[in-house]
Length: 310
Picture 1: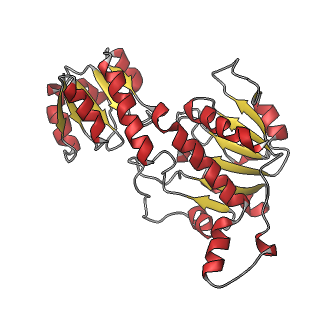
Picture 2: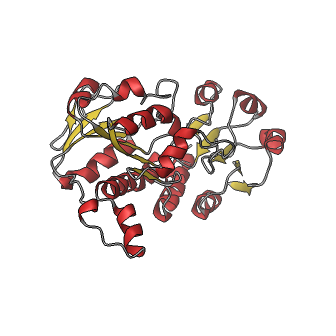
Picture 3: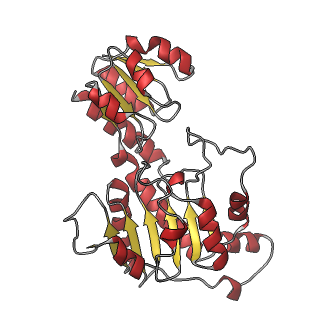
């Protein structure tokens, strides 16, 4: 097969494909127009998030057998239309699920123990102990929404912290085990101290976490989002941070990210974002939860293996 690489990836991916006899064109700098003009020449394309693979692009891809995304989410690919044309769609959430799970734990522990503030203060010569008294994770109830690759990996990491783990997944059942309890969304609202979101971005999950959702929790709650930025309404989050309904937030993703996930739209970022960057009970990172050296290689290997069984 002749395969077009639209975005850069770990070299292992094209090396494995070439070793199997396929031709890989690494055209990372092609514009959208160049991709559309030449896509009919290829049997497969490898993308990350540079462009959206729309119906219009798919219609120009007369010989396409597969679309492979080097990552987890598939929202930048019209999967249903591609599959209706007989085009296989692959992704590799197995490759970065461990990285995402570890990152979510790291953000939560940093928030609970005031590590970013304390680190800054010590560097400034301030030795404040009482003001940085932390909160223990042990004994808390953690609610997880979404029990796919990311949610299950996060639950696995939580096992050693002696927490109560409640998991809700609208599309799965029968996954409860010795350390997690499969439950309803209502049970999470009633019992959770911490909420961690692990859903894909779809029409259904767009602004899933909003003011109404947050105020269904019986307790004041901490929120972790390592899924997609637009699954959470930032203005509603800030409203509830200000009144203490949300005690703190860990956000690796923001609704203001560009489609590429590689930058914020810095043109007139709203007041809600300005609040987040000033808040000491919010931990932020630039969509890097799944972005480790190990995950880069694992994603490449897993994606190559899926393509090679075509």
